[in-house]
Length: 173
Image (tube, rainbow, N blue to C red; front, side, top):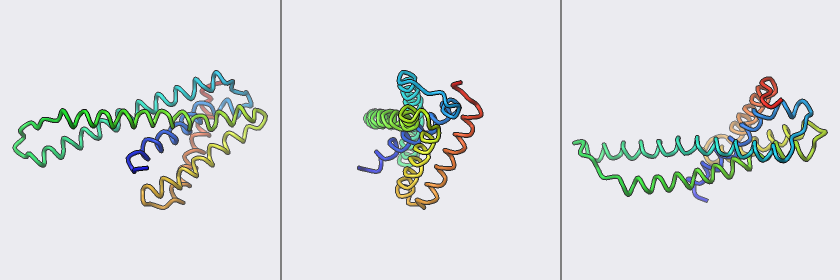
């Protein structure tokens, strides 16, 4: 797998888990179960929001990079025809967006399926989510050439903070 594909997959998984924890933590902590219908709606919504955010961020970033390089290569400011490059950027961004959406849905299903599978144990969805974030942190650390331990701990802490905020906000009572 090339490094460009890792970004939308990672962003999808992390965003899916984090967003779902924020939305559902209050309900899960209260011991009220989530049905399969709500689970699919929440996961789909999370995936769509994550995909839209990814598309805007990635497309604007790539367009900005092309403009910056174009200005360096053509300092007189004559407009460089960018239509072929624009199409490539658009296609790459759409492919990444689809990956972010798919993996966002999958990430969202981690706490949701934990809640459905173990309706009497409120800790299982949180445990599965935090373990998943910790494992993702290991891979992000390797991808970013950083400390896998630091990334893992940071993502777990982020998960804990979002879970506490989600319980406090109780978005889905």
